[in-house]
Image (cartoon, rainbow, N blue to C red; front, side):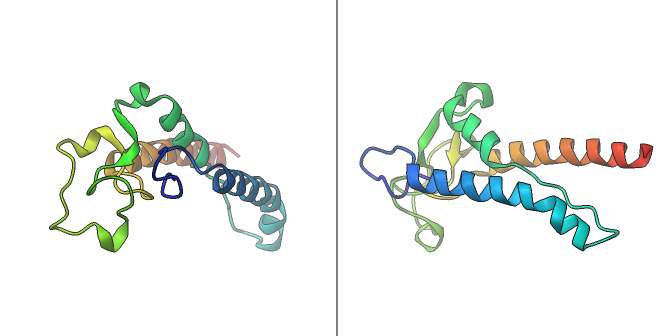
Length: 129
C-alpha cells in the first residue's frame, strides 16, 4: 500500500509491519482454532509474501509499474474515487495496483493461481491420509 506516501511512492512501513505481525499471530493461532472446530479443515493462505515478491521483483511477473495505481493519477484515487469517468492507464495488466490501495486484476489472477496450487496440494494430501 502506497496511499500513505503519495510523494515518495514507497511502501508504508508501519502498515506493512502491522500486517506481518497480524499474519504471524494468525498462523500461530490456527492449530487452536482447528482444535476448537473438530471436523473442519482450516488453511493459512499467505498473500503478503507473494504480493511483496511482486513489488520487489516486477519483471518476474511482467509488471512495469508497482508504485502507482492504474486509475486516475495513480496517487490517491481509491474505491469511489475511481469511476468510469476517471482516466486509467493504457495497459492495466502491467500495473501491480489498480488504485492506491487495491491490487489490479493481473495481481489478483497471479494470487488466485498461487491459491489454487496450494488448495490442490492440500486436497491431494488430505485424500492420501
